[in-house]
Image (cartoon, rainbow, N blue to C red; front, side):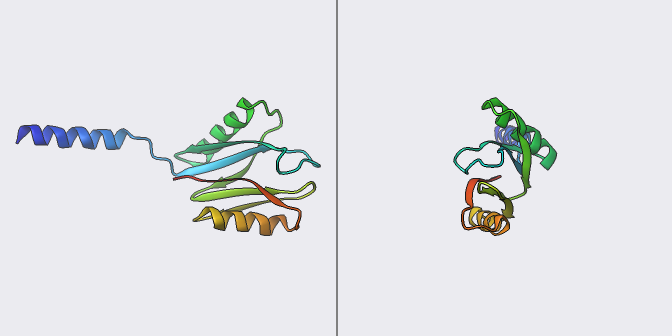
Length: 120
């Protein structure tokens, strides 16, 4: 009986110490005239949107991008769409919803989803 209690307590402590991410962010380095395939980006996750944004900036800069800026903060899924002159961001419960919202906000047929991600 004592072994079962100890095992249960160990499992509970492990579950409590596991990091749970509740938010995500996307930082991008894109300049006017860049296509969706040319932009640099970083994705980050954290317990808060601010923490996720810091991680996204680190990831973006780590890849050698110099002009990173957080464009999307999300709970669930987020997406960033871009064309040579326009961009759009989107959020949703699924990646498809987030991408559709980003494309709608971008508003041009030349727009393309550059990056999308979910926090789960």
